[in-house]
Image (cartoon, rainbow, N blue to C red; front, top):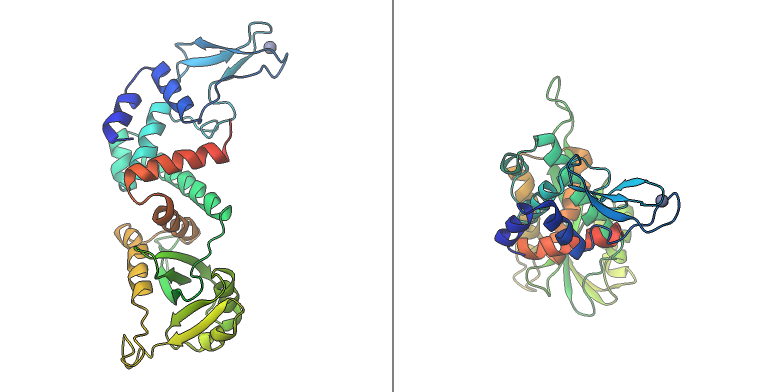
Length: 299
Ligand SMILES: [Zn+2]
């Protein structure tokens, strides 16, 4: 849906907003009374933010129209929610979004965190397998620097290793990233084997932990390039330039934000992997995230 269409809905009447969110499957169409089991009906209420409440005629029980939905625990108006999800989909910076929709920065930060959690959950439920027989997957590790928790006092270590892999048979390359505690073979080899299909060709640099990659069950062959000599091996053509450019795209947003807090890094990596699969542009990202919310918060 285009920004203009979303704007029309978001600035429409409370009933238009409910119709729209129901059409996406994000709010319940009908509701049974928890007390007496009767069908509840929708009542216009001027004193509630969403304009409507579920109401049981038989026993006078009331319930919010958000009951059981993704929005249930939130106090943000539904029209603001529609705009926030949309602007997140289009990757606007969180501070800009807070100003645009007139919510405080903390609120916008929390909403973006919840949306990244939806991305994480989607990835947890979909196993990521790269490569395949004869397909080249490039692997590498990269250091991510994040913001220290407190700005006062001595700076603590603010670096985390991320292990990454990219499938070179797709454009742009589809990747997989995982935060690792160290770069030892015992840590990295199981990750490689778990995320490639049988017969995959692996390209890497000559980091010692990779010496046994060729003997992994799912790996067909392994070649490496000596980065102290060449970026592309002149004899074999082996290189790791796809994973290098994958790192720069994965870090672009974090750099613009001047880093993120350590506990947020996993969800930012997940968002990146989610967007390359389900949200290549703002419009696609909006439609995918609303579908994922519907699946994860069935009403
Ligand atoms: Zn009732």
